[in-house]
Length: 385
Image (spheres, rainbow, N blue to C red):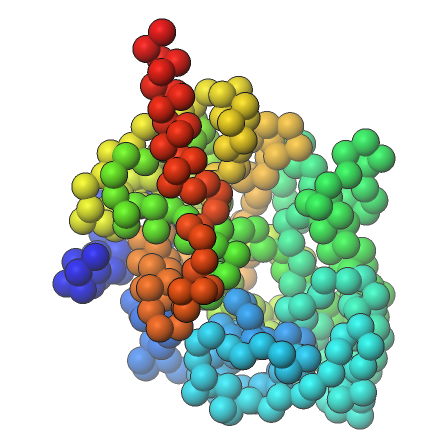
């Protein structure tokens, strides 16, 4: 996409033109570049000492960038194996402690911070050990959990009062189930150590610059390539995702305002259908694009095309996965960029020097161009019978 068109689309979205882009369900966006700079961003009224467990991959650099811009003092604790893919200037202002959450927390001993952001809690024991170590030397412990704690999503309008699942079903074990249970049990460990000084954030699908999972790059990149696009699911299926910058900036806001509790964190601000989402993706590209909807769940399942983030087939254990309530988070200040801005910034990062050809690797999930073409041909042949 040429620079003029990219800038026009971003400015249109920022100016409240999301409706014209087929994004009427999205909140107006804040204008900025992929580096996150907002130009005249004001500093916080009080500088905090913030410890980030993790900090160099995906959410971490965005936390660091925004916290530094707000005037906070940031320390990160990592194994020292990864370098941030963006915001190197911000990391020059950060204290970097080296250790291992599973084996060596000694660098954290004898230190104090106003708040900790646990961005790497992937093991219950890790979370238990860090929470117990920091309970008397840190004010707020903010644990980044997941909406996966509700899996299986067997109902709609899931709120923070919906009970997390604390053990795997003996008949339905899966990586999704295991991850959700791990996060739910980790939340308990933080509450045990910090009590009412705990803040738990449960994000849904996180997308945007630095998303190395390739989940959030699929649709922007697919529409950039143009041609005939296979779109799975029913047009009225609901979808949810959150821009990593909206998430991390709001998390810093929670710490600045000493807001505690449990919060779901996904978006957009109001219900978004797959049809509106796809119309929004169409608006970000100047390429010639047509699309073929396949609304037949049975056919899609037969051909192993049951998700294309943010869409996931709303059946069985995923029935309510895209109907997570975010009312509580919005009440505490969570705001949203438009989906157009997220998509454009993701593309800009994906094709910038911050992303190597090796990192791009194969075409982003869920399906390759060849597989997409194959499924389309099968669908058309079936329809002609």
